[in-house]
Amino acid sequence: MSDKSLESYNKKRDFRKTPEPSGQPKSTDETLRFVIQKHDASSLHYDFRLEVDGVLKSWAVPHGPSSDPRAKRLAMPTEDHPLDYIDFEGVIPEGNYGAGTVLVWDTGTYRNLRAEKDDDALTMQESIDDGKVEVWLDGEKIRGGYALIRIGDGEKWLLIKMDDEEVNRRRNLVRSDPASVLSGRTLEEIREDETA
Ligand code: MN
Image (cartoon, rainbow, N blue to C red; front, side, top):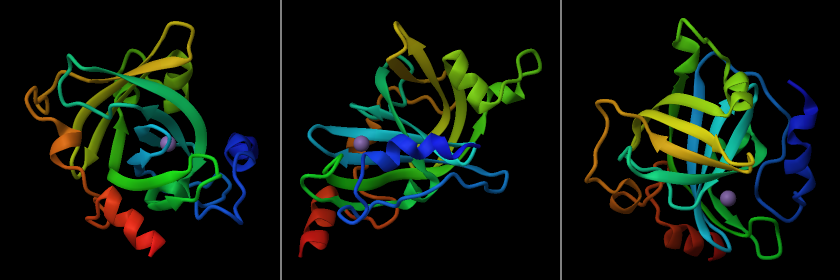
């Protein structure tokens, strides 16, 4: 794990002005974690982050995850974030990179499904390089297999629910359960708390 992986993250931010964590890659135990943060920045989106080799590999998903395999959700790769970001919730002040309110929409552990295949056992980093990530998420709101697939010139990925027993074609995950799993707060309540 190289210190370079968070260079882009650290460069974009002035830690005297934003409450976000600074950080270096960290090693942890074998339990891998994920977070999905609802981020009310210049446009509302969901940041999907997976712990890989001591950092959080990140994608911005404008419409958030779906439990319907027919919904292919655009996912734009963003810079690696430090592991400490996993429970960051609060307001990034105006004038800073990513200014706006951040809410921990869901978090939990995940498994690398490609590592469990006999024929092409790939690590997470190898899966990312290959442009196809398959994970099993165990969150409080979200559960089941999800694939991230790189498309076109490599600038865009799709987040797609895999076909398994956790498929639900009727449920609108992000709409039915908007509050934080850490604090129970909505975006508005976090904004009020932090600016009071
Ligand atoms: Mn974001």
